[in-house]
Image (cartoon, rainbow, N blue to C red; front, side, top):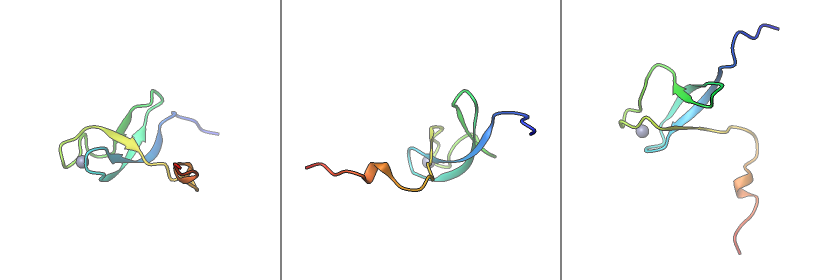
Length: 63
Ligand SMILES: [Zn+2]
């Protein structure tokens, strides 16, 4: 199969305002929004949105 590169398309959101962007994740782990270099709020820090089914963060509650 063709494997021209290891860049994957992901969904990322701004850590400042939560705006979601289509983004590429580089093999190095860097995240680059597609079509822009920064969020409309001015932030350049993005985190991947994990769309996998289920949410382990809700699997337990503090007692
Ligand atoms: Zn933002």
